[in-house]
Image (cartoon, rainbow, N blue to C red; front, side, top):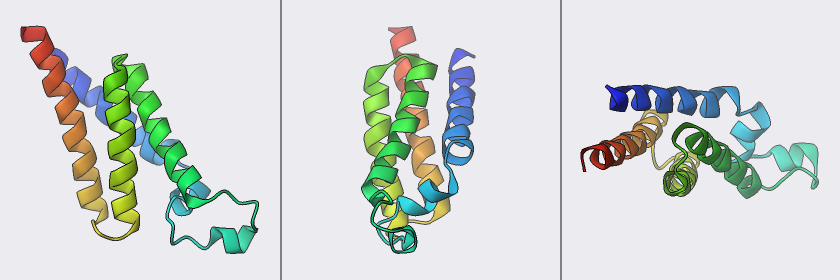
Length: 117
């Protein structure tokens, strides 16, 4: 039961990070194909700042939920790479979300294995 609660909490955290804590400029600006710099000028942050900030937001959510810094590092790297692939249109939104859920399941499996010894 603890693993299901953890998974559900991770999914809620993911939704908060992807939808509540991702403002419009971040959602658009995290793609290297965004034209927001042209629209807002050179002071508008580069795409990699937005993508990194978004991935770090998810990493922070993982720390808050699990307290596990290894999971947080994995979340940062995976979220950055998955979202980069989506912005390149190498994967769809559904594939993006599925890939993120695979990492949440992985954290739950590792957590379960640590409980059972």
